[in-house]
Length: 91
Image (cartoon, rainbow, N blue to C red; front, top):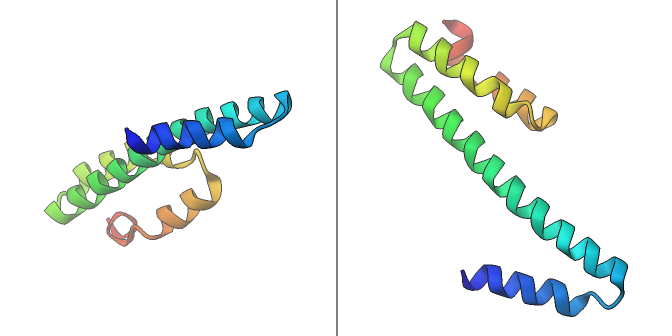
């Protein structure tokens, strides 16, 4: 909460022109949106790893299939993460 307040104050005090104020507002919105997406990606990856650790290939495949659409929001990071799932590729 304090961090959000500080970021809001920081972005509004630094911006002196209308364009800079708008850019600061947009950056705040995008930062919040991207943070929630990053959290969702981490959660999905944890679910895939947990399903793979159980040894059930069907559950692992289902968890992986549900994680792929979320991970492909960022293509570069998604390709790195998808290749790092050896239990899924082996199953």
